[in-house]
Image (cartoon, rainbow, N blue to C red; front, side, top):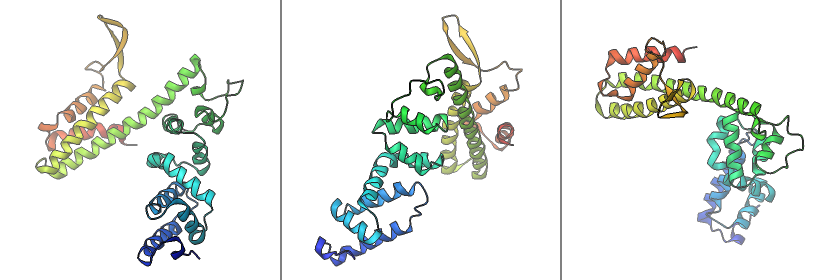
Length: 271
């Protein structure tokens, strides 16, 4: 049992501690991100008492060791800002612990690399975060750790694949927004908000497509730089250009042209 009175915690504050104990008990400790959740709860409890008191309370009421508490606090501090990103990549507990071996920006960069380039072998991730020295033979390493032409081509291929997924996500979002605009009747405050989202998302989709797939060309006044160019009018892809431009300037949208736009978008999103 925890002696609240001995730690200066009166009856009126005990209910708060009981509530936090219930939150901790409700955590599914088999879920990797529960480590971050535990750290968040402990940090909130520390608004009520200092760390030493919280550690004693956690040991008596939640069966947590000091090491458990320290690890959870670190996870909340270092990984908490990336919670949703880690959730989206279905991060394992082992991956979280490896990330915690890094410090400050090394952790951020490690998560950036994982999100951009997908699964990275554990040893390569440790090298990228500076927690392990690179081996003498780096031929089998992740392309982020190699500086040669083959690695460059691998990185471009990986980023292009992830970029296509992001682009298709934008197209699906545009399809959803145009449908919502139709349901809102094109008028009123809700329609205004939807149109605003359409403009921003369409512009993002245009930039992504220009970076991913458009024909590069040179300009006479800047021959050493490749510029994105929409394909010739006869190209089937000009339909996408027309559809995105309509969404980029949505003031003239009505049920007839949103239906035609969605027909174009659905050709990319339907399986």
